[in-house]
Length: 349
Image (cartoon, rainbow, N blue to C red; front, top):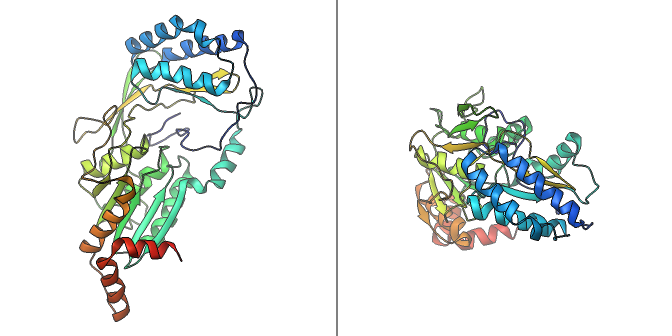
């Protein structure tokens, strides 16, 4: 499973329906899960750190084996992996509704993605012709790129664009690369991924944007990206890419700080539990740095609740309408006089 790869085979599970941990585990079964987790860590990108996590899990096996609730066990295991490694991606999750239920099939996963609109939460023209796009996650299949093309086609004639990633927890692959491909004439430089293979070999992958054959739809108008503590993983890379290339302004709060990807499916641990094991690291060629453990610091820091109003106020100030009428000028003047009020009134319609 890979959260920020140009040719992803699966995306980081950025959103899924709530699951119920409906069966309890025996101490023997919980112990099997602990042992499976220890074994799965052999593929972690940092062998020395993996060894420390494995040692901590073995030392705590007796206590962990007494946890019968699957959700509680996943939380306890994740506390150990995170506490030792500091890697927020190295996390155990409950992936099925019951201990006996099979994982979602490819067809079921595709249906789930369709029901979630491939991460789309909102595409909107705000008062005074400011575009607004909100994504819950970045879809990794070609359908994600098609979604972005459709959304940008609707927003291309706005005078400035706000991309809201405050609730975006990752994904990656097709949608993020395509969205970046719409935002500049000269391709935006994306992050570089350093992969560790099972035989210990190291591979370097330079991510590249996916520009439509007909060209980008939003290459040079003002751009604002909203971030928050919840912004994670591939969403952080998107924000980092924008900032490193100086393409737009980041507004909000520092992101969560998860920069270690994986390009393989999450290993099953048994009884409907899985673990995300990063086998890669991300860094940006323009800065030589990444966001793992530190997050992405916005250019303009505001509260999460105030980020949209601040971005909207700034968008109104720099937007350059190509045509004006008495009606459009009044809409613009009213919005500039009271950005929060204009947003609030718009949401009531």
